[in-house]
Image (cartoon, rainbow, N blue to C red):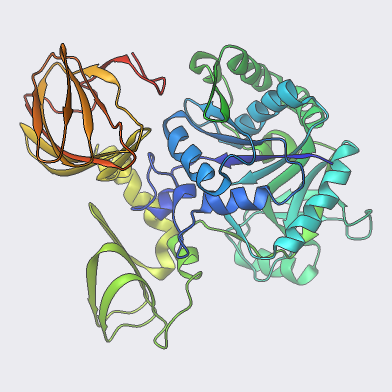
Length: 479
C-alpha cells in the first residue's frame, strides 16, 4: 500500500517568538539535537515503504528554506512536491489544495497522510501501527483521524469522543468533536475514558476527502481547483511545485478542516494511540524537552546562574547572566529578548501582535534573513547607510538587479566572486572590492565550491529591501 505524506508547514508560531517569525516559521525551529521540527516530521513521514512523493504545503516566501530543510535529511531519495500558498488560509484550504494536486498526479485513489510540521512523536513503532490501521480504513472510504490517549486534563487541546465498543482493527467511530474545555470538563473526560486528544493528523484517500469538500464547502473547493489550474508549475532540483494563483486563492475560506469537514461528515473514524505525541506550541512545551539540572533549570547555550531555579534559558550567541530568579523563560536572539513567566508562555502572541501593530520588523524577520542563494545579516544601519554580511552558497547567484535609491560597495572576505557591474564582468578575490552606483544593473555569483562571504555597504536616501528591480532570476523572482 502506497502512502503519500502531506506535510502542512505554515503558521508564524507567534507563541514561539522571538525564534519563530513570519519569515522563519515554527517548523524551522531547531531543537537541542540540531534537527528542526520540520525535519523530524519529514523523517517520520518517510518511514513507510515505496513513498512515491512527499507533498509539502507551505508559504511561497518560505519555499526555499522548507526545501533546503527537507533535502538536508532526504538527499535525493524521495521526490518532493510543493503546493505554495500566496497567503495562509488555514488547514482546510491547505488540505483541499494538496488533495487536488495529488489526485492530478497520483490518481484519486491515492492515500494521503496529513501531518502538521510542528508536532513531536516519541514512539515511532506505535505511530507506524496507527498509520497502517488508518490507511486500511482510508482505502475503504473512511476519513480517519488520530486520537491521543490523554495523560492529563489538558485544557489547551481539543478532544474527540469515540465509541470504544464499536470498531474494527483498532479503528472506531467518532461520536463528536469537543472544543478546548475548561478544567473541570477536561477532568471529567479524562476520568470517563471515552475522549481522546485531537492530534490534527489525518488519513484518507484523495477521492474521499474531495467528495466531502464538494459536499460541505463546494465554493472553497472550486477556488482551490482554480488556484491549482491557474498556478505556475515548475520542476527543478528534483522538486516539482505549483504556486497557487493569488486572485483565485483569495476566495478560499479561512477555516480549519475540523470545522469544514470533520465535524460534519458521517465518514469520520479514529485510531486511538499512545504514541508519545506532543504539540510544540509554546516555550513551556519546548522547555520540557530538555532534562532539568538539580535546581530545575534547563539551559540551551551559555548561561551563568546564581540563585536561579526552575528556569529555561536559550541563547545561541551571547552569554546570559541570571541572578535570584525563579520560574522564568528567557530566550535571547541577536535582535530580540523574551523574558516570561513559565506559566504565561501562551501570552507571548500578544507581544507579537503589538510589534506588528507598531510596524516593528522583528515580528517578521530576523537580523539574519534567508534567501534562495544564502543569507544576509544586517550588522549596522542608520538613516543613510546599512552594512550587511552576505553569504552566497557554492554555485548560487543573486538576481540581475538594479536599485533606484542606493549605491553599494562589495568587499570580498572569503571565497571568489564573479560580479556583473553594468557592462563589466569582473572576478574578485579576498580583500578586493567593487563599487556599484545607483541605477546600475548588477549581479553577484559564487563560482566556487566554498561559501562566498562579503561585506556590503549601502549608501543612499532610501535603503528598504523593496528598492529592487529584478531583470533575471534563476529562482523565479524576476519582476
